[in-house]
Length: 73
Image (cartoon, rainbow, N blue to C red):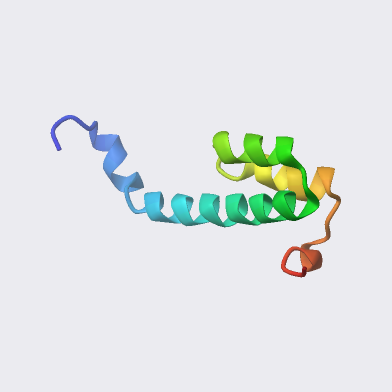
């Protein structure tokens, strides 16, 4: 652990939170893009990691979904 700077250690508990956040939005965006047949968006969302930002933009700005529509077929 000597390789990490001392300021890094307080952020270690955030790693699982960021992981769950990212996987949640990525999974939701991939599911919607797959169901809509948006192959290009599916590939971009699968490869690019943006901490959920690109996924949220896709869901709310591109598809124009409401939050209540995120979990319906």
